[in-house]
Length: 331
Ligand code: 5GP
Image (cartoon, rainbow, N blue to C red; front, top):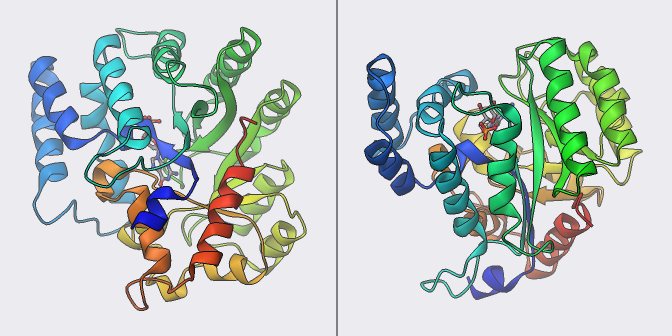
């Protein structure tokens, strides 16, 4: 464990509302009671998230059903501030029981939401205010577009990311996330060009399920993203394009893929394909709230003997951690 704790590494794929420590979410439920119209949803959501046997997902689509309850609890500026602070602490501050932090640097991502109590801009600024309390070498923000957004909403979110960056705020990239079967990815083109033109990095959730059509995957790759989230079901043509782009890092979320049942076992995980070809990967947590994982735990999976882990040696794990640092947008 000391080796993993002391290894400099970057967390590049963590969703804010999916990374709130459960104790913080329970405090938010206590301190910011929701209205009657949302109380049943919050109660059921918290029950699932606290269940002693874990969240129990039959498939990836069950996972997206957890978020409305969490959103009800982070809908005010003060609740969002507390949630963000707690997520950053969880990743960056030294845990005395293990003698170090989870990571040396985090690019936290979130979809700026207009909640009725905050505009998208206010939402992003609340999150940035917390991120910017840490040195630039430690934390930055990626602004996410939800696949289900219409063209106008996508434009609003990307314009917000660009204007915050132009103001000097610590926004380093954009992401496209949300239920992988929503939306038309042809709509993204001009927004991605705008983000790139402003100097923002681009990461795209891609081919997360077997139902994502190859044509959509090729379209997303045609936007020449800098990093890819998951990239689980790339076909031979798509893999060829990725391998011929030696700087495109794959954000790998081992536990997330196993728990959402998009990958049957670590032995079958696509990380092996990229490691064999010396292609950059970054090990990430995705959503520690439902998955109950940690970045140190994900690195431990790299090193544990098969079939629990991948049985990688220290030198290989050091190389993987270095790749995560090289793939940061914010440097
Ligand atoms: P937020 O952006 O609200 O801070 O974080 C939660 C949101 O991130 C979810 O509503 C969902 O849209 C997105 N998200 C979290 N995990 C995943 C994932 O594994 N795949 C995809 N496609 N989206 C995710």
